[in-house]
Length: 371
Image (tube, rainbow, N blue to C red):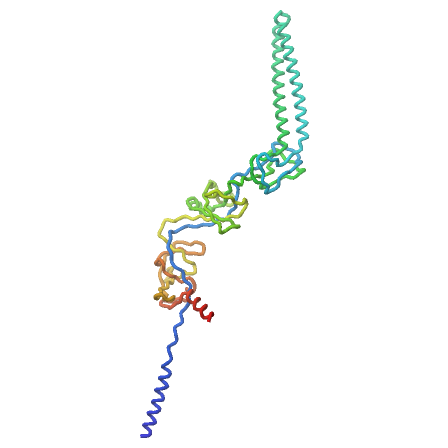
C-alpha cells in the first residue's frame, strides 16, 4: 500500500513538471523584411538622353575687307557690342596714300577732259566757215569722249580708294556678344580672314548629336531640357533643325532645338536633352531591375499579398512579360495594377513566405529605439 502511494506521488510530480513545461507560449515566427514598390501602368515610352551645349542660332564671323597690320583691338571675349561699334583697326597709311594718288589722277583726268571739250568747241566754230576738215572735228569729238570716260573711271577709282580706307576699321555688323577673338595688335591679317566671332544672345538653341540608330524615334519625340547649372529648372524645347547628312567622323546627326517659349540661356552652357516618344503597344510598368527574377527560364516577380491592414503579407511568384529597358528600370506587363512587388532580397524569397514590409519594420525599430 505504501508502494502504491509512493508511485502515485511520483506520477503527480512528473505530471506537474510536464504541465509547467507546457505552459510556455510557442516562439513567435520571425518575419523577413522586404522592400517593395507598387506597380503602376503607363503608356510605353522610349526615352533617350543626350548631352549638348547652348549655342546661338545666329553667329557671325567678322573679318576685314582689306588686309594689313592690326593697330588696335577694342573688344574681348564675352564683351557685348552694338551694331556699328568698332572692333579693331588696321594701319591705313598705305590706303591713305592710295587715296591721295587716286585723287590726283582724277584731277589730271578732269583737266584733260576740260581741255578736250575746249578743243572740240573751237573746232565746231571753225567748221562753220570751212577752216577745218570734217575728220579733224571727228577726231576732237573722239578725244572728248575718251577724256570724259577716263575722268569717270578715275572718279570710280577714288571711291574705291576711299572705301578701302574705311575698311581698315572693322565695325560690328549687328549687336551681340563676342564669342572669340583671333587677332592681336601687330598681327598682319589678310582680307576676309575671320578675326572676331559674334553671337546673338536673343535666340539661344540647344545643340546635340543624335546617333543614327535613334534618328527615326528622335524625329517624332517630345523634348525636355535642363542646364547643368540648374537641373531643377526643366523646360520644353522643339526641334528646329536636323541635319540631313551624318557627320563623316562621328556618324551622328546634328540637331538644333529651341525653347518652346522664349527664354534666356547662357551661351556655352552644358545642357541635357531628354527625348521621349510614346510607343505603340500595351501599357507597361517600370520596375527596378533588381526586382526581376526567373521561374522555369521565364521572367517573373515576387509579389506580396497583404493580410488585412497589417504591414505583413505572403510572398507569391507571378509571371511577367518584359517589353524593354529604360536606364535602371525594366518595362513589364502582367502583374495587376497596384500590386506590391519585392525590389530587394528576391534571392531569399519562397512561395508562401511571410514577409514584413520594410516601412513597418523601420517604424517598429524606431519605436523600440525611442523606448
